[in-house]
Length: 207
Image (cartoon, rainbow, N blue to C red):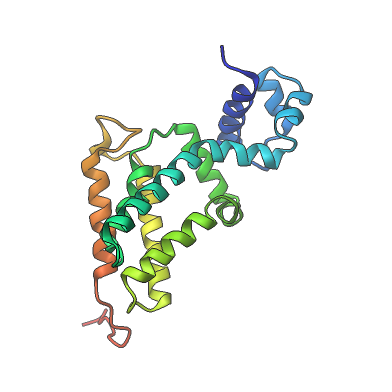
């Protein structure tokens, strides 16, 4: 039998994703979950804390695995830096190959739409991202900081798109892209980092 805390988390995840964080009240959650308000305050304290716990129960094991892989690859590459391909493997593969519920994907989409993502990222992803930024800087020391940040931004965008859509290639397992597809994303992102850019060169749009 599902325990009260898990029931609240499951209900909150579903309602936050369906209705949005701002539009979902604690009373709405307790009504759907069949619990009382005291249960939410006992387990979580506030609506913000409840949202944090909904997110953390999914992303904490993923981030843990990311850092474990980065530690492993750094040890294998020592005393030199880890190559960009291995860094992106450590960052992308744990999330791409994890089991993701449709409700959680809806929730993350809502968080983005409501402008909550920067604060969520600061609270739950900042330390992990700093670790990966450091590894990327060491792997590609000649890349200008602005270009590095844009490449990370593009990589996150490609990964977010892969997580939020279900194209034909996922038909055999919509909630869990294949190992091959995940590796395609690693290869795509790695190529982007390795592509030489020339800020002085203009692209001729009209010929």
